[in-house]
Image (cartoon, rainbow, N blue to C red; front, side):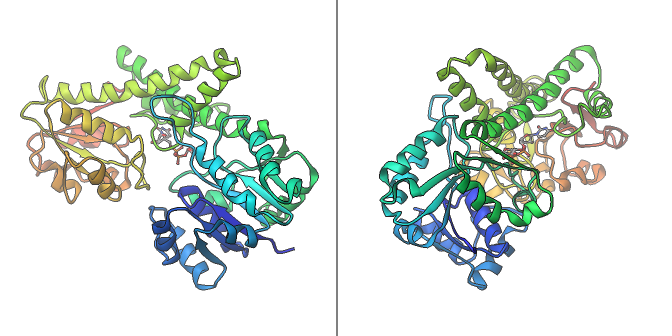
Length: 439
Ligand code: UDX
């Protein structure tokens, strides 16, 4: 059967999922309560930067497989499978996740559900949420238990969202009956045919896989950044250490890049929400190490500011700093919990004159931090700078010519916050090169 799909919530995850499922041949209706977002998507304009996604959006709007609405009634009427893709941000002043958008989706959709259907949660949630939403769904839907719930966490990375959605590493499905499994096997048939592993499990395990994966990745990054701290104290080189570790297949080299640490809309808030939930379950001891993971990560930012101050002669007063990068990572315009912007703001607060340049996240940064200065290019941002800070490793920064950059700065001093540059090349061009975790 050709199921008709809805995607409820068209943020990063939802917009990507809606467009990619239409690309696979399904008829898809995307829903968002934000009318401006609906209008923008319906006009073929993506509100986010994601390589390849806008083409897919436009192609599927044009062929009629994809459209957008704000009406839950229309969505309930249209869909056989409803994907829930709303955000679960960190609560203000707390570690816990705010799941109110999820409850709002179920409360808005369920009263209109008058036929058999499947509701599939994709958001990252505290374990236990799926069972609670399943109960709520059965209570509020006129069809009762004929509206079933499945949990299908999403592992996509920003910058690789299309690839990660169409060719996932694995599909995890939490179910409590056979019908959802059968439907989801059909929905994801093209991926399963290509050998994508499928893990069928219960709700809590499915919910936990997602946060456990993010906790592991965050731990791996903080592990190498902790080694960077020790390397600095011991005059060792964490980049070579990381390379040597990576040859051990049990360790592997991915997510072992030392530097300014992790940010973004997922890893930081997900590990905090995970700790909060474990606490509620009486298992807080199991995750106390994540507090350390978080602390190591935040210390990298402080260390970066210290290094920049050291190179400025002990104070930022009267110093001009060029900050290269504002996005939390390259190939993204996302500035949520961006380590780069955090460092830029701290230096400005301490009296430095900071000029930022980011090839894609510049406008988002400017809106969030109008107090900083912005340059139209890396060279513009660096003009007259006493110290250059590379904080997001965009390829165009890695490719910078040390001579050309050297010709515009006030002094040739650079801190490589991502261990992305070749130290020897920069030193040979007369730069005072410093990096986190290296002599
Ligand atoms: C992450 C997970 O990877 C993804 O599976 C999940 O669905 C959402 O959260 P994302 O936030 O897009 O994805 O970014 P990711 O590529 O994981 O990078 C996270 C942060 O870690 C970035 O700030 C990046 O700069 C940093 N990082 C990554 C490092 O500091 N070192 C590394 O070796 C790798």
